[in-house]
Length: 101
Image (cartoon, rainbow, N blue to C red; front, side, top):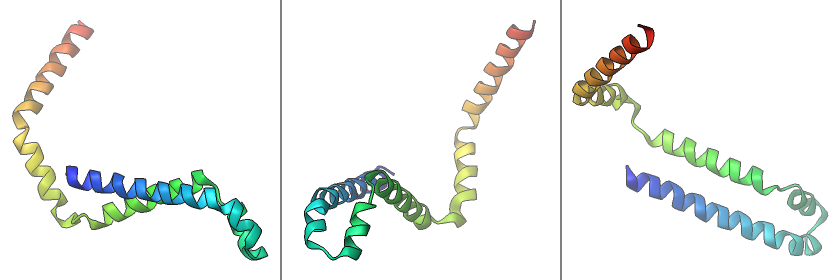
């Protein structure tokens, strides 16, 4: 789990640094680039680039997950924590009784 989180943020950081370099170099490139490329570099916004990068990385991470195992993992997670859920339900019932009576 932690490895995938660190991998996600490292790729995100690399993409952010690359986008920042492109943004920093684009004014210099716009003076030496053809008119068609200048229109593209002037319309590039850092917020939109970062949103697209985060959205693409999240879709890639979700796409790599094996969805056939999801129901089994959810049931296993609930069964392992069954005693905790019982205690939480008991606490909620006691709190409800104290609040309403």
